Length: 501
Picture 1: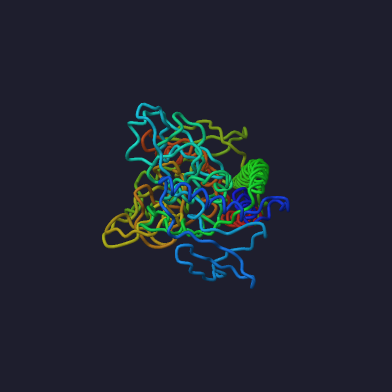
Picture 2: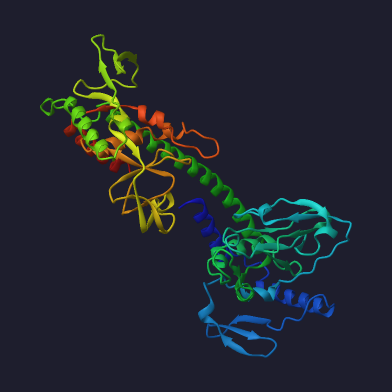
């Protein structure tokens, strides 16, 4: 269970009366309801609020069922099917709108400095965090949501509502604030409810997950009727205080747990990545599986690769530049040399390789190509679709690739990442097709490229749109084992990767 799940559970226990014990000496919540009704009647008489036409009283009958009596009409109905959970005997149920002023008025002098809060300055989560700009009240008193110190506000639009953007307005300039119109404001009736208890109710899954909305996706707003009719569990006043204290104490422990968990998750991810990279490093050095003398050497593979490329150049599938091979060999002095344009130069390689292997450059077994130009409707194979983060889109033309082909990102932050094409379609504009010699075992080459993923990502070129460093990519030295050994290496990589999951 992560920190967010723990906090949700704690709030659920809090509003069900399971977080702290009940004290028989506490004044019962029924007395609070009487005080709320008295305060409302006083404000109606003073013409500060309108009479609540839907006011009701919820009580438990002698038959143990819950009933709701509407004061305006005297109508009584059973609401057992609406009661979401049991609460302690000293608690009471009430409709949210009957115990909270949901349309409070706010006023201030025009020349007063006041707080101004766009949605971006309101914190998400389980606290009551916000920041503000200071502006003259005359500039912000119209066209915004007005809030007074002590009021509770919550975002009514998605996803801010689900992200728990809600707070209690504390001391601010002028004692008033103007905020985004996407807030609803609540005010308590006297000393009957603690603002923090109401705030925790607003942040509970019970309030958020059952919400009803109106509007289109991404711009939905919580229905006023949902909030007004929501059943609110009322503890005795003193118990509310104990609940708030316990929630805050436990939340501080959860925050420490969450921080530790995040650190542990990060450490596990680092260990996983390090182990995976270590496996790949052992693989490309010839240390992951033993060499078998009967499998011969890889020398004959080079000639087969050369012949394959000559055929593909002749067919127009590869450029002539693909025929420029490098010859890397080990001298009698145990140093590595490379023959370039009839000149032999000493080179340094990152690893030592088994004697049965040959060493080449990645460009000798791997080339970036444009793919086959084609017209006609087809799926666009862009990075988001290939990662499962967006649905398929249809385009009319592009560079066509087939199921099982490999393509590589050459533009963007993740340049160097390779995908195996899951279905026929057109490459996204940030891709190149990755030709891999059929003489080689493809999973072995892909494992080699994966080993250098971070180096390729960190050596991108271009400021506005970073590109794959093709020179680095093509010149990576690759040790080539005999084909059978390549297959055994790839199988071993798969086995060990499965163990890490």
